[in-house]
Amino acid sequence: MFKQNVITLNSIKKDFTIKDLENISGIKAHTIRIWEKRYNLLSPERSESNIRHYSHQNLQKLLNIVLLNNNDHKISKIAEMSEDSIIVNARELAFQKAVNDEAINSFKLSMFQFDKILFNNTYNKLLHKKTFRDIFKEVFIPFLEHIGLLWQTDTLLPAHEHFISNLISQKIQINTEKLQYSVCETGKTYVLFLPENEIHDLGLLYLNYELVLRGHHTVYLGQSLPLNNLNYFFDGNQEICFVTSMTVQPYDDKVLEYFNEIDEILKESKHSLIAIGKKAIDVRGHKFQSKISLHPTVTELLKVL
Image (cartoon, rainbow, N blue to C red; front, side, top):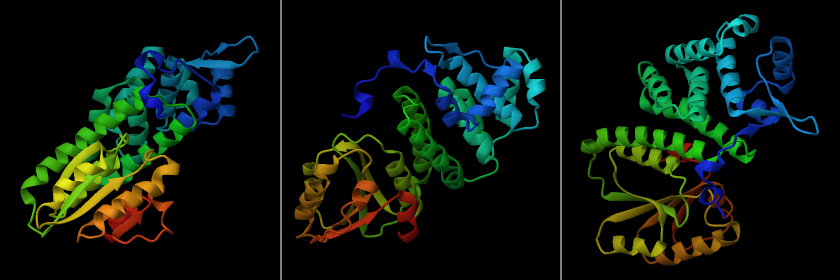
């Protein structure tokens, strides 16, 4: 079962191993130990078996230290700063430096600190230098890929992922709304939806933005849609291209069955389906009767759309 359904805010991860800190910060465990020993920058607790455990405050401090150190602050000088000075200096730097790697680190920091102000300031700084499309492709996509790795290593919790995903989702929707009046009549409507119990919608939201940007008419249905709801779109004469994205649903042993059901729905019509994600690629060798195209990522789809 998908973890988000059972983990609450009360279970936000409070203890991190040194491996967790390495995964999140990008700093080798050996270096973290040196900073800890030589400069007393972090103060982990130790278990009965002498294993280090770092608090959420330690993690936040390390991310601030890394941000300062990557921008010409020597570790020895950072060690002389008070706790408050490290936070203030890192925050000021995060506001000033908002290009790619620095921005990703700032977004990471905002996620772990639940800091919406830092997120928005970093985003607005990027907007002075890049278009929204560039921000999404050059900053948000690498950032989200890193979040995926943190999720896989059990370093990230749902509260963090939900917080940052909602902020990014807001930016996509705001930028899509600005384009709504530029839609052209192309004779085809794109209907975007996620399978039942699928809630990872950032990729699909961004694809909706790209389609609207290109002048297409779209209908965005969002998360967790039962397939029988698509029947409504068969009543008119408009050609429909259904678009779905699969991250965790359907389960692996149900994927082919899901596609066969869609194939049955579409085979007597002029309509088509675009499916995105690793689960879609898993059925690439299967022959369908209807127009079904499969793509590993939104980025790959956009190259051929």
